[in-house]
Image 1 (cartoon, rainbow, N blue to C red):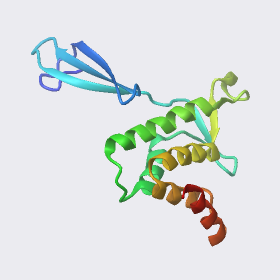
Image 2 (image 1 turned 60 degrees about the horizontal axis):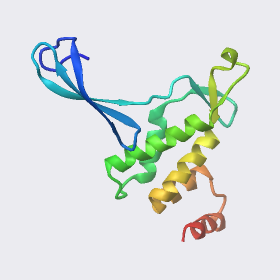
Image 3 (image 1 turned 45 degrees about the vertical axis):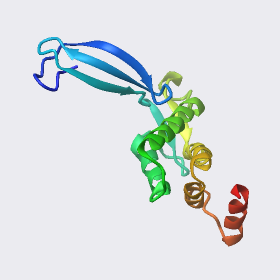
Image 4 (image 1 turned 180 degrees about the horizontal axis):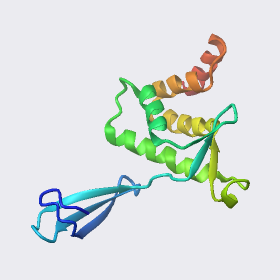
Length: 158
């Protein structure tokens, strides 16, 4: 890891701690040259995952798309940045758990998940975190046909 002060490429890890309920690691480092101390953070990144769209197309998984959907649902809601990061991490953890190997691609090593499953996962966590955000997300995800189906969904959370 490069020192942010002297740009030396050698640093040593002084301390490592699990943070955000074990979804990330904070490392305290010290530059071997100038002795400057700094912190780095590591998070799990989902790689080699395809998302199967409703029309059958496949795309690479893009974390920002999940984050953007959740941000829209949570817009102007009293949810802090830490809670949002935990939400995204929980959603991604479940995506990893629910994704399945696609036997026809790359000898079964490429994993896939349908967009509908991602939506179900997001709805589950939004319902726990913020009922208004849940209804916002559900109104798009479930594409209510009429006001009665919307009212039924509202009754589920009240």
